[in-house]
Structure formats: structure tokens, C-alpha cells
Image 1: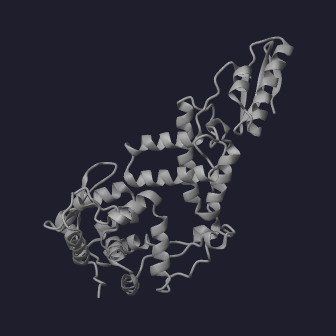
Image 2: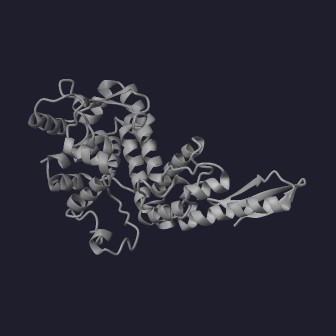
Amino acid sequence: MAWLYERGGVWWLGYRHNGRQVLRSTKTKNRAEAQQELEKVEMLFGASRAGSLTDELYRALTGAQLPRITLAGELADWLAECKGSTAEKTFVRYQAFANELRDALNATDTAPLLSQVTTDDIRGYLTTKRNNTSASTANLARKTLSAIFIRAVKNKHLRDNPVSPIKPFKALKAEKQIERRSFDLDELQQIYTQAPDDFWRYMILGGFYTGMRLGDLICIRRGTVNLSANRLELKDDKTEKTLNIPLAKPLRAILANALAKAGPGSKNDYVWPEQAAKYLEKGSGPFSSEFYKRILTPCGLVTPRKASHKATGKGHSEKRQVNEVSFHSLRHSFVSFLRVTGANQAVAKELAGHSSDAVNALYTHMPEQSLVTAINALPEFVK
């Protein structure tokens, strides 16, 4: 709904757009002329809500061409821009959020227009996201979408950012009480034995002996594995510095076997090409679910999850349950067992920060022999 008010002898027009109040001058002192501007705005909003905002109507009311930028088109342009300037794993996360929003709003190449996307539309998507994920994940989605719409405003594709009126989500007390823990040695042996194939055996060994995250392990490239020097040579996404991670014997053995089976290839090829392609398309979700269902559940470390919305056809009835252990627990285990070794407190302290800066400091500033000694001191649980 729009309204008129007088200020300084001139009539002003007020209305709410995407949850924000907009005030602009009609540039006239004549009430009748100002009323005509008011009626134009109300007609535009009414036609937009009804889905009947045509080029002809928009041109007749505003004298300008109706913007034809669609939500799907804006999302595609933003992703294309990100692809060349964003780290691979970050791009995967961005792509997942953009695809979820597109699906939630049934976006196609022709509709809805970017200008038709409202704060309520975004709030609906984010509320659903929050109902099925943690507050931090939903807030990350909110932050990402806000960046998309801020870019659209800067490019003059939109007047306002529809995400800005939406406040960040707060974690519930029940969620705060559940903390991830590390695996003990018996549990590590259990999950390794339960692993269905070499890929998952590699993932478990990689998580425990390097502290690397799930996506980094999946997308490891041939050129990263330096068997002659017995180390992984990674480039940090932010600093572009090389990180040298000593290879523990069990991890070295499974990587050497995987490379031998694959045969010759480029250093830029993925060690696990099928899994890397799946991760780049769908993100970490399928792998986290598989780890949960095929490894943790049979070992009795978590309780079986209820049937998903895909199985029941009734949608999510409740939030995904949060457990004390997950794939990320392997990273906790890496830090915990380093601390147990006693002589490696400095190494564990560096890594415990869980930031890329801390990882970079760990693998570039510590003496190489200290790192080798620390990795070799970790227990072997491969039978």
C-alpha cells in the first residue's frame, strides 16, 4: 500500500518494498498530480502481485522498459562470476545455496523476474533451511543470498536487497548443548573395518592422519601426492602458499595403491575422479549421509535416522538430529591424539584454531622433522 504526505510544500510518495520503507518526491505541489503518481505505484504493485505486469503496462506507467532480468539469470551470472575467482570448495557451497533458492521459488528462464522476488520469498526459503539444518548453516545461506542481491543492487538490477530485513537465526539451547567429540582408538578401528571400499578407507585415514576436511580430501589431486618425498603438497586457498603434510604409513599405502590402479594421468587429475565430480555437483551432503548410514550406524556409534522426506513423501517432520560424532570428528581425533603424544603440544595448539591461517601456520612454520615426528607418533589402527 502506498501513501502521500506533504513536506516543504511538495508532495512525497511513500510505500514499502521488500520489507523496507521507500520515500520519494513526486516533484509537484499539486495534490491531484501527486495522486496520479500514487495510483501508478499501486497499479504496478497490484499487477506485479497478480503476475500480470506486462511490458506495455510498465512502459505506460513509468515511461521505461520493463527489466527482464530473471532470478535464474541473475543466479547464473553470479555463479559464473564466482567460478573464476572463488576457491573450488567455496564455489560448491555457493552453487548449492543458489540452486536451493531457484528450486524453492520454481525459477525458470522466464520467471520470476528478479524484481518480483520478495523478502517473504527469501524468508520462506531460509525458514525451511533452518528447520532442516543448524542455525550456522542457515545463516551462511542468508549471508550468501544477501551477497547475491547486493551485487544485483550495485549493478542496478534491483532497487533494494530483499534479504536485509531478515535477521540472523539464533541457535537453540538444545543445539548448543551437543558438542562434537573425537573417536577413540577402538572406534577408529571399527569405522575403518566397516568402510565399504578403498575410497572410504582413504577418507578415514586422511581425516585422522592429516586433519583435512571432507571436501579437501575428496578433491585431492595427483599433483598433491608426492610419494618420493612422502608428503602431501597442498596450496592454501587464501595465501596460495604450499602446505607440506607428512604422510603416515597407512595413508601413504592406500594413496599409492589408488594411483597405481588409476594408471598414468595429469598432476591436475583427481585421485578419486568419480567422487570429486559428485562433490563438485552436489556438495558434501551425499558423502556425509553415506558416512552416517554405511559406517557410523552399523558400528552403533549413532542411531538410525528416520525415513527422509523423499521416502515418505511428506516432507521433513523435524530437524535433522545432531550427533556427537560425524566425519568432522576425525579432525577432532587428529588434534586429540596429537595432544596425547605429549611432545607435540605446539603442533596441536596451532591446528586447534580450525582456521586456514592456523593450518597454514602449522604446515609452513613448524620444522619439518617436528611434523614428521608428530605424524609418526599417531597410533595405527589398520588391522
